[in-house]
Image (cartoon, rainbow, N blue to C red; front, top):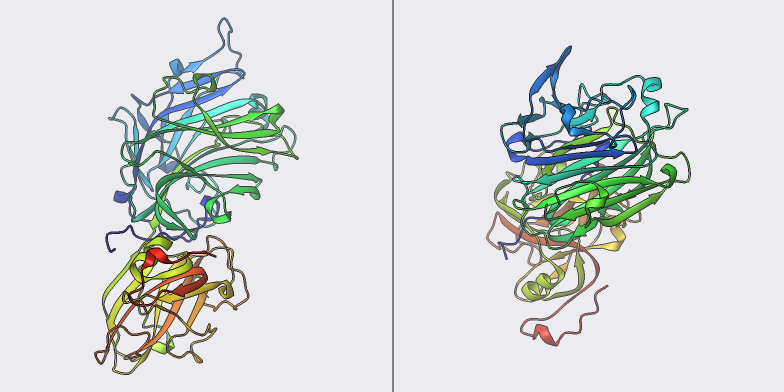
Length: 486
């Protein structure tokens, strides 16, 4: 049971990362083997087999790698005009990334922590790495815009991906209409390797693709796990050997954006005609058409955060103050509905977080509050249940939902906003993907909720979920139970 993967907790998506604490740079790494850009006037196909990293003048923390002219392909027999000639440059923010160009592919490792209010590549708010043709004047850039294009990228060697971390690679473009520089339709793909609970869903170790459409920083559409979407690629079981191509396409005069993937890395070309692309999401824009051009708009970045949030006994809250709390062990492990039925005889119950287990000492007889983080899903506390897990077949729900520490008694529970500490009303719907605290109130030597009856020692395994749990009594055969899960 304890060998199960650690539980996941969903964090907010790339566009709202400010203030989030990310994992250390040594824990993040992937390699980008190829970059492809295509429109009616030119294509770029570059595999990063060579490249020179050079600093940008006047910007201390950003280096560049220029795509060689030989990688830019123009239509046969066509002499490119000055507006057709483009100079692709990858800007790498080395405040957040380390970069190796000695390998056969571009290897990035690092973290991502956006300074609040920063929107320029120089401080990397738009990504740890991006590409541009160096044109930052909108009037000059507009003639390059196309309403039919196919951007793609090949990823491999997700060396840092594991069940302990949320790991994501984000790739996308930002277009602009031809008349108004303030209208900026954007399309992005985020690829996440997930093993464990994430936004209330249990993943078994899959690469999950999410998409988002923005217009001048206004969200138009999301296809994410947090809002019930996301596309899990089947058949990828080992992130360290996976090779995945991602692509974004504009069609219908810029009115439609399509999202593709393919696996295996067998195709030598990266254009649409190379085949085997799988369309997994599409968006029809009813407003401004998408115009793609390579002007500081390609986004590539790594993000990561802890997926597993072991419970703790916080000493900075009133109910635990002065009670000599000392934690001896804690863990957070994934437990599916079938696991709970087999291990604890709990049925008609769908877990939305991992199994939280903690052991600690305190002043004998004390009432204490245990706290653990979980990712919100679109349900109110009144639609959730916390189950005290007991392997002898007498698991039981926690009792009364509270909105303050003052009224709590042993066996009660509560949910609070992790960012403000404010308790959530029983009927208030949680925000999908937002981080919350689950509080469990347990008194030392409580015969029902404290599994360790020694004085001054508390042990608590519990799980949060939905449904109307039933508890199969001691000794009854699990296989004979009719399980009508809610």
